[in-house]
Every structure is written in C-alpha cells, then in structure tokens.
Length: 536
Image (tube, rainbow, N blue to C red; front, side, top):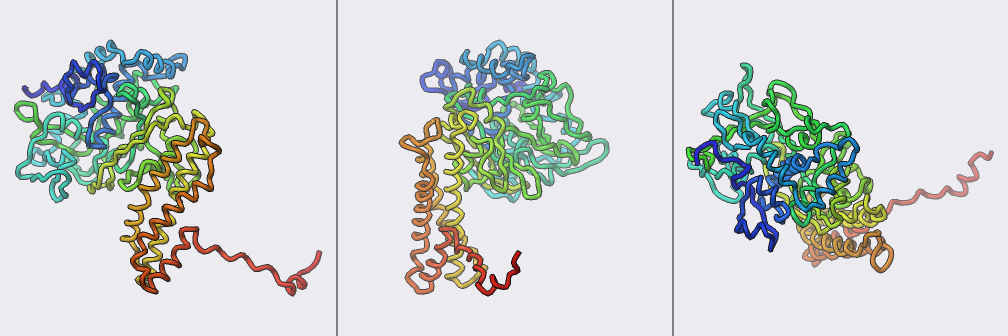
C-alpha cells in the first residue's frame, strides 16, 4: 500500500463486535476491523466497539458522536427547536441515513488520510516536519501508551527503544486519539514557531478523568443516546471538528473557542502530532509529539464527566480511580442533585437527555488512572446493568432510594477503614502507624460484597422508586452494610486478638464502625448556678 493511501473512511481501522445473527455480520465475514464508513452504515448491526484500551475507547466515542450528529443532521436545534424530535425520527428509521454518510465522507475525503505527505493528515499537524528537529522525534514506543519508553515500566509487553516494533496503521490511529485526549503535561519534543523554540506541553483535556457514556443494545443506539443537545445559540455550520476547519490552528494564538458539542468534544487537544509512515504506508516508523499551543490551556469542557467543586471553589472532573467501583458514582449519574457532599457533584449533561432514546440504557465508564504528568497506573473500564430508566428526569421518586443506597455503602466503608487503622496503631503502640496493610485487606473484603449488596437492593426498585414488596427501608439497608463491615473487621483483626494487647486494641477501635465515641452532652446547670442567675 503506497504511502498516502490509508484512508480511515474505507480502510479497516476500528475494532467492533457484530450483533449475533445480524445480516451485516454475515456479509462482512465477521471482520474485526471496519472503516468509518462501514461502521456508521452498519452501526445498527454492530453490538459495540471492541477497543481494548479504555482511553482510546472514550476518545473514539467522542469522534463518532461528532460524525453521527453531522450525518444525521443533528448539529443544531433548528428553527423550531425540534432537535429531540428529529433524533427520535432517526431512531425510528433504525439506522443512520446512508445518504448523509456518503455525502459527508465525499466532501471531506481528503481530510481522513492517516498519512498524507504534502497534504493534511487526519488530526495531525504537517508543519511539525519543519518546526521540530528531525533528530528529536518521540519514537513509536512513546506513541503507543501501553509500551515502555525511556525509563518507564512495562505494562503488557517488553519493548526497547533500540529495536522498536513499528505499530500498524490501525494501532497508531487509536494511539493518536489517546495522545490528543490523555496526553501528559511536561517536557516534550521542542517546536520552533516564529523564531521561538519551546518544549513544554499542557495535559490533555481528559487526562486523569473518568468519562461516562450511555450504552444501548447496538452501536447505533449508543451513538444516538450519546449525542448532547446543542445549545439554542449553536450554528451547525460553525460548530466544526478540527479536520473540517479550513486552516490549521495558530500555535502562537489562544486556542479556538468551542462553538457547540462537536467542537467541544473533538477540538480540545493540547498536543500536536505527526505520524511518520514506513515506505509501504501500513506501519508507523516514528512520530513527532509536541505542544499545540504555547502557554495556553483550553477550558476543560466536556459533557461526559462528573464535575465536582474543590474547597477552593475550583471546578474539576471526578478522577479515574482503578480501586473505585462504578456503583459508587451511580447517584451522580442518575440524579440532577445528588446527596450533598463536600464535592457537590454535577450530573454529566449527556444523561439529561439520553433516556429519551431508551429506558434500558446501561452506563459505560471509561478512563485512565494516572497522574498529570508521566505516571500511568491502570485503565478503568466498567459498565452497569440497564439503569437509565431510574434517572431522576424519568421519575423523581427514585431520588431517595438511589442516593441513600450509595451513601450507606460508602459510610460503612469509610468507618471500616478508620476502625482497622486505629486498631493497628493501638496494637503496635505507634500513633503514627498508618495501618495501610489492614486497610487494603478490609477494603478488598468489604467493597466487592458492598457492591453486590448495592445491586441486589437496586434491582428490587421498580420504576416508581419503591421496593417491589414495600417501601424502601433505610434501617434494613443500614444494617446490611454494617453487617458486611463487621464481618470484614472481625476477619482481618482476628489474628491479633489472641493477645491481651491485641484484643484490647481491636475492641476499643471497633466502636468506630458505629460512628465513634458519642460526644458528651453539656452538663446541666446545678441548682446553685440556677439560684445565682439573675431573674427578669
């Protein structure tokens, strides 16, 4: 394949899983990779994306949302504000419009080449070939985030910078997306613009964040549910993706302002990249990775994140945490005003309208447990059963049950962690001992069982927010989570109770499971005091 012919529109580049028994899956011989045109044309026959890396999955979904909105003519509210009705009309047809798909890709065909020497490759900046030092490329191991590069540790495989294995074009395509959305801050390849050379990049818009997506029984349903209604002021001809812009962005000027959902979710990158293909155009031999804007950071805008507020009043997305189960975020996903807490979480905007597509949608959480700079820990990929039917907009009577379920589960998880750490400090007679070993063990015992308890009680809720055989019982729910905490505490601390010191430490710290030692009530005034008080 000559360089410059790998076009994302028709060349297989996206891994998918076909719906069993679908007509397209039979004619396509169950191909694991499809091009963007085939993906959109047969989205109703595709069950879901089969992207293994969670950050690449989250990034690709945002690209596909933008494409779906454009081909389905859902880029603006319209003169009568009938965006929701028009989305339901597309849903009723059972597929994305083939005419819109073909017309769009015909118009922008030249913008979807992954490699385009002398042209404009997709989501890349060809100017880097001149603005960056040719001897200071990033290398393919740094491009592929699952590979070790430099002094970084190995994840899934061992690679060396001395003998790198060139990634395939589809693999490089997904890694390109990861860098645009999750790229780290810090030093990068130097880039010279207007006579000034710098080598410092800002973190990508989704770095450290966990994004949440409605998921249906087919990719078609998933894409329609994931569309965010454009604001009334959005003009579809101005709300453009980066590859639809006539000109490349000026790195010496402030970043372009978003004009609506499509530009908001595809044009927020803080990194500029350029892939260097091999002679056949089937693999990537090297890459430039550098900053996109000098000293400027785009506002973090995204409609698929839970936004929280710090004690200083700063707004930030809920971070991805590989040790935190998805059920603990459920009330913030379903409720417009989750139970009050110090972080004041805000529901992702997409869930305010996703239920219009179906009440049987699941929630998929995708993210990257990582730090702002180079350290990456673990991918986060989790999903729920069908829960969108319980959204507050659908029935506000689900609010107390869903909120209290999560609160009780987390309450006794926190108390349990505090109790075992206090017991350990008393046992070793060191007030500064953190008891991390016991804390990790009780967490491993409590949280999986608490998750099972949560979903068992959640499934009892019907669409009216009540339990099938009676009202939601807070007392019984509290006792259930407390019992799980007690069992985990007893199991972990039992080995030290064979000694007097250990038994005393465990028994005294156990009270933290029940809220700690109650504060002494203020003493009642004595009779003498009362007699000395002046009378009116």
